Image (cartoon, rainbow, N blue to C red; front, top):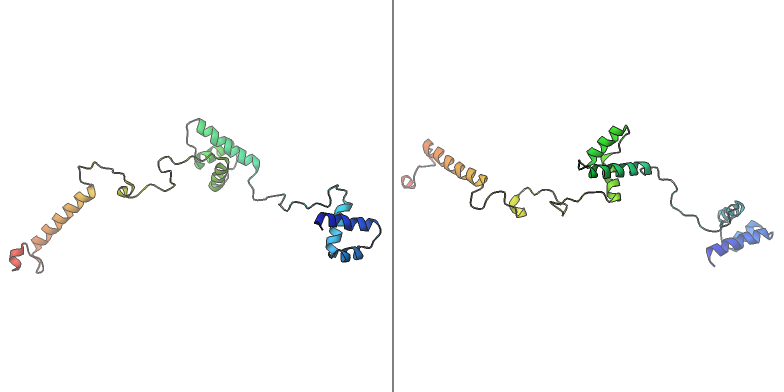
Length: 180
């Protein structure tokens, strides 16, 4: 038997004069179950037999609607004036209005929900700026010229060799002929 029909049947039997104990024992239910539906019936609601939604009515951690609208409006206003549009600019506008701004994370979350986040056009894959240009395929110098690191390495090699030749340490000699 469907649950709603069972609830109506229990209250109908109660209204006909049957005792609550016999009703809920006959239906295979508990005492709290029966009295829950009896109190709902006595409340006067025409749809007393239906389940109420289990979703909470109040969300204490949710950002208020006014705050979300204010963040969105400030962001749209900043974008229209070709100024900075990040969280720091939005917080600055809040301070100019004389109100306390939400945290950076809250601002970013609101902007994401509203679809107001600007995509990174230089690196759309979401990664940061590459540290090694060779890995990313970019060349910050012209192909014909040696890179600074290569020039530095050549100088270091020459200076190192000159230094050891001048010291004439027992393990190093200035020419391969002297070793023989």
